[in-house]
Structures are given as C-alpha cells and as structure tokens.
Image (cartoon, rainbow, N blue to C red; front, side):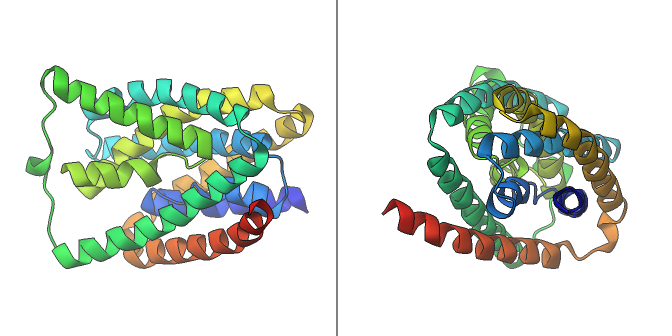
Amino acid sequence: MTTILIIIVNLLVGVCIGLTGIAGFLLPMFYTGFLGMPAVEALALSFVAFFVSGALGSWNYFRSGNLDLKAAVLLSVGSLAGAILGVHLNLLIPETMIRLLLYLVVLLSGISILVREAAAKRRKAVNSSSDRPSISGTKGCLLYLLLGLSTGAVCAASGAGGPILVMPLLTTMGFPAHTAVGISLFDSIFIAIPSAAGYLSAAQDMASLLTLLPLVVLFHGAGVLVGSRYAVRINQGLLKALVASGSILIACVKLAPLLAELF
C-alpha cells in the first residue's frame, strides 16, 4: 500500500510541477508527515524527484524560449555550493527540528503563493522579454551567485525543492513569470544533485530506497511530462490557489502537535 501511495503522490505532484512549476515541497511533507519516514530517507527520495522535474521542466522551458541561460547558470553555480552546505547543516540538526523547519517552509510557501497570485491580479501587467534585467559586471554576477548560495542552502536543508523560493525572487527582480519558472527549474537540478547524493549516503535503509527510486523517477517524470503538455489548457491561478490552500492546511495540522511537543 505504501508503494502505491508513493507512486500516486509522485505522479500527482509531478503533474502539478509540470503545470505550474511548483508543488515539489509537498513530497517531503508526504513522506515524513503521512508515511512517518525518517527525514533523511524522505529528503533523499524528494531530491531525486526534484532532479527529474528540474531536468524535464527546464528543457521544456528552454525549447519554448523561456530560459535565460546566463542567469540560470550563475544562479546554479551558487546553488550547487549552497546545497552542499545545506545538506551538512541538516545532518547536524535533530530530526524534530528538521520536521519543524520543513512544515514552516511549507506554510510560508503556501502563503507566498497566495500573496503572489493576489499581487499579480492587482497589477494585471504583461511582461515581455524587454523586462528582463541585465547581468553585467562583477556586482551583477556576484548577486546571482549569492542568491543561489542562500536559496540553495535553505532548499537543501528544508526539502523545499527550489522553484517555490527562487521563482518569486526572480519575478521581483524583473524577470517575466514564465522565464522565472524556467530558471528556477534549471536551478533546482543543481540543488538536487548534491542534496540527493548527500541524503542517500546518510540513509539507514538503503535497500528500501533503491527499490523505490526507479518508481519515483518513472512516475514523477511521467507526471511532469503530462503536466507540461496540458499547462496551457489549465487555469493556473486556480490550481496554484488550491495547492497553496492545501499546503497551508496540512502545514498547520502538522505544526500544531509538533509545537506542543517542543514548547
């Protein structure tokens, strides 16, 4: 039954990522909160899935002209180093604190989605390629490297994935929404590589993980492909609102007993 649930959830989350570029942060929540899986194993499976969705999703955005490679590469170099740091920090923190961090990130992510969607409706602005910020000089490159370093560390330590933190920051900097999604998906590949390797090497039940990994890759990847194909036909605003509302509800339910236990 557990295996079937893992297949279904990876497929559904993959579809959501293909449609909107977000929702990956629900995977570690599902593994730890509902299956009771140890945090290290949960994050190992999650980051393998994030690698798959990042690779497939960013390729689709590249083909459609919505991937700024210069910004994406600079950001990803920083994220690669940040993710290594984030994994080491995570492995030093007690598991209860890891769960608390994960649930808080999910809660804040859900709120962030709702706030961003509301702001987008108020602006009713149409972004174009001319809106893209230029990347020039040492200061410009350093900004992207530092942004990647900080977001990579937070994502790797918490299991947030990448797009949920990086995408709103990029849109605030002036990138069009679709370009921001494409860059953040590309960036998530380089967060996922050291994160998946680090958590897999620290996992206690490697035999079970090796059994589940092919299923995660296959069904999560299939979900991303299906979601990408039908993204233009779905009301993304409504879907994001549903994902955000569900995330907030789940995070609150999981945070309440954890906070009571700690305090």
